[in-house]
Image 1 (cartoon, rainbow, N blue to C red):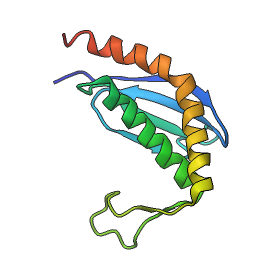
Image 2 (image 1 turned 180 degrees about the vertical axis):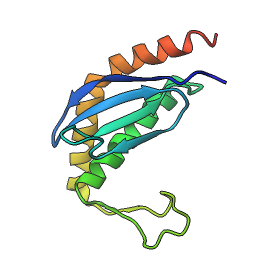
Image 3 (image 1 turned 45 degrees about the vertical axis):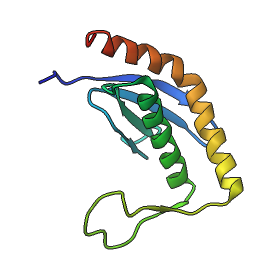
Image 4 (image 1 turned 135 degrees about the vertical axis):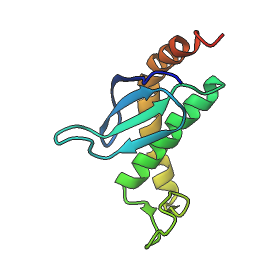
Amino acid sequence: MKPFYQKILGNYSSILTDVQIVVRGGNGGEFWLRPEAGLCPRVKVGLDWQEWPECVSSLVHELMELFLTVRGYRYSKAPDIGNDHAGCVFHFNHEGLSECACFVSGIIAGALPDLSDAYKQRNKRKK
């Protein structure tokens, strides 16, 4: 079993809000709108993907979901008996899509070099 790994990658700015990105062991990702009082939203992304594009895709997915939630474009059925995210529905127009693209690309432009370095560092031991 791998030891626990988690590291703050940094805070990155875009339209709407700053986002703190945290990398961790494992794969997948998640976000918090307000992790602690006074802090900006946080996105966590696992680094143990087989391929680099999977890691990037996970970050893009979480950033999109964060933005769409903050803007009020995310809806969940109630009650959610399965208690999972499969029941979420996103409803937005083309303007909302453009805003989402601007938000995500702003964060990605700043974070991608740091994420790439962290991914390479974490995965060099595997080879």
